[in-house]
Amino acid sequence: LKLALLLFVFTLAAVNRWTLTAPAQAGDTEVQRRLVRSIGIEVVIVLAIFGVAAGWRFTPPPRALAIAAAQPVSIHIHTLEAM
Image 1 (spheres, rainbow, N blue to C red):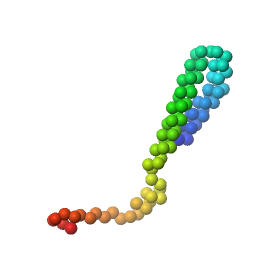
Image 2: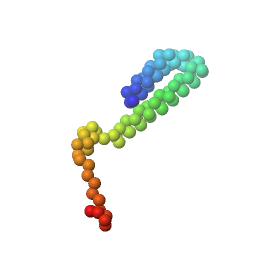
Image 3: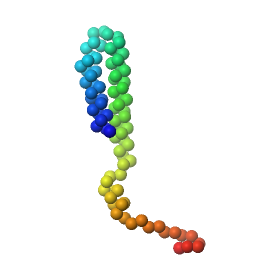
Image 4: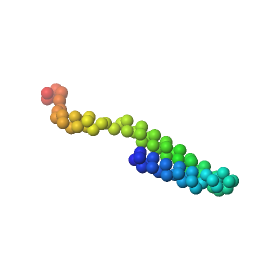
């Protein structure tokens, strides 16, 4: 997901650079608005990339999952009727 978002943001940045920058510098106000909107979308995508990367902190490593799966399950009941 992170790589897909990176690819999208790089593609959008390239489109901005090679198709929108020159007309925006020439003074075309419609293109300037599109460029500002596109840069805002880039910022949102970069924040989404940071969010995806931060969310990986909660994913246990495969090594820990393998150790947990290899251990047998046991239950210990402690009540007055059964022990």
